[in-house]
Length: 64
Ligand SMILES: [Zn+2]
Image 1 (cartoon, protein in one colour):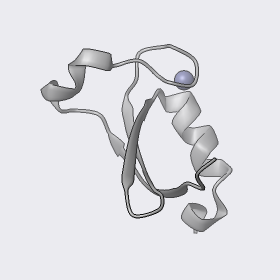
Image 2 (cartoon, rainbow, N blue to C red; image 1 turned 60 degrees about the vertical axis):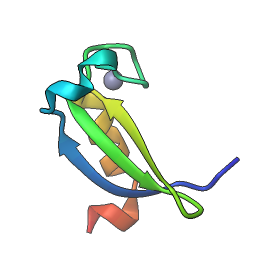
Image 3 (cartoon, rainbow, N blue to C red; image 1 turned 90 degrees about the vertical axis):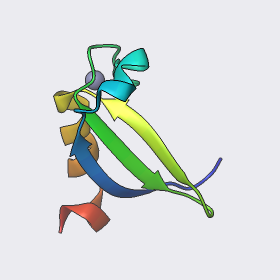
């Protein structure tokens, strides 16, 4: 399994993202775009406010 490092959490506002606007954590409508960096790549995942907050809270590197 790749190790992911949280890079940023941004509001999901782009209309081009509307294809799959569902939180990958719980399936509710997603409102945040979460960026992770892995081995040489950036992974984008969409999350609702609740799940994005949980990710932020559990990511010490990002919290500060
Ligand atoms: Zn969610």
